[in-house]
Amino acid sequence: MTSLDPRSPLVLDTRELGRRAGAMKKLNFSVAAPADLGVAMVAVPIGSDIEFDIRLESVMDGVLVSGTALVTVAGECSRCLEPLAFDMEVDIQELFEHPETDSRGRTIEGSSDEDDELPKLDQDLLDLEPTLRDAVVLALPPVPLCQPDCLGMCVECGVNLNDEPEHKHDVVDARWSALADLVAKQGDEEE
Ligand SMILES: [Zn+2]
Ligand SMILES: [Zn+2]
Image (cartoon, rainbow, N blue to C red):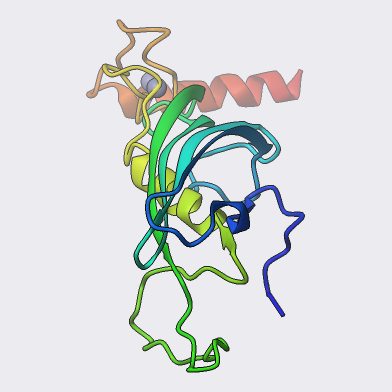
């Protein structure tokens, strides 16, 4: 029994590759992005195209997957909160180990120590999704910006300073102008 769904587009079958070290297979394919691919501020939109250009290589301990994934990232600028989107190429590099087997070739369930971080092959299947997720999160800019020199928002009134670079408040009069605004607003409401 395997816990992986072979129909999932990110679950790859390595059977064809065989266990002979050195065997190699190139794969080019695109899949619809799964959910939760990113962080709060920026993420790969669910269902967007992800293009994989990878190779599977049979090595001593398992199957080495390496290559790139081209993703679209969308989110908002962390300074001015305007929407932003860009393409990003992430490096994929992961060794999927053969599961440990007993003398009869049966998989030893739960034999691997807990802190063994390497993902395992499961009935010749491997799941690329956690690898992709880690790669995307790692490659995302920690402070996404709409442009490198984004001016952000006015802390006083929230105006986008990219639209109004000259915008500023007279600090001394700020309270009075707030009061004036209030009076003007009340005046509007009374009309
Ligand atoms: Zn911005
Ligand atoms: Zn302002």
